[in-house]
Image (cartoon, rainbow, N blue to C red; front, side, top):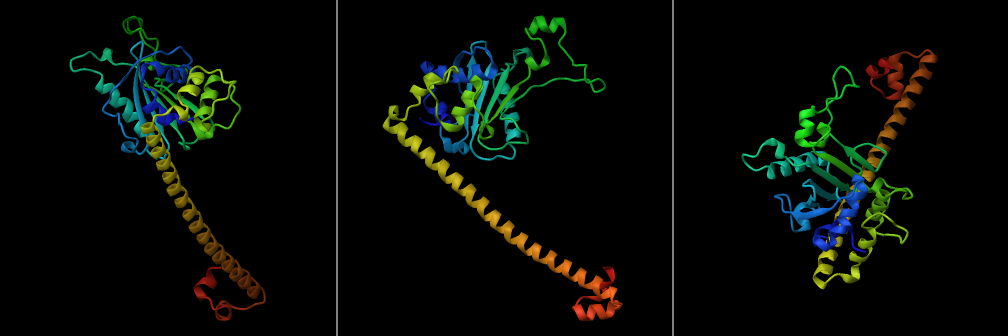
Length: 293
């Protein structure tokens, strides 16, 4: 089966195949999701190399809400900043000049990363915007009745962007939920016949390598080769860094060992009544060093 990060860009853009992405969103958001269409954004790129193999897909759901898909295989220290920029960009793009702010669309940012981002033990995180009192943590700001009726929302978090972060490499468990089954597929590229998560049965057929056209197969092979090359570069850098660290550690260890030896000798000679000048001369050490220790 082909990788999902390539398929979502190349194979799943036809309306008949939306069911696969809808299945992932349904499992993630825990509500039935139907994609109305895929939209063009200033952030969309046609070539995987344009964004160093980052996939950026913008979808509109049947209720008008927008979903950004970003899949990243390579480490980015500022990836959280990229998430914030992506939602801000989409909001500004789809609010036409002169439209009231209430026309802003709800944006879901779905981020699938294949590296350890931030610090945490889980593989799936959700981020929302909440307003908590600075003096009473139990006091959370809510919408007024007029706002609820006007915007059909319950809380401010229903208006602000919502972020989902799936750290694929952190998943190392037996799939117990539909989301787990999706994460397992994203990590292994395999879908067991026992999987029941929405969209996976269709993905098992649509994403078969033997169904790719010759052009699609060449494009997929290029992406896989780029991935292998990028990982090779990263692993080479890690190996060189480890070797350098070991060498530095050995040198430091030797220096620490020599210093401890000198200190033991100084203490032993003092115990025998030798003065600092004599100790300095016998051990070939600066007298100032001997005096300090």
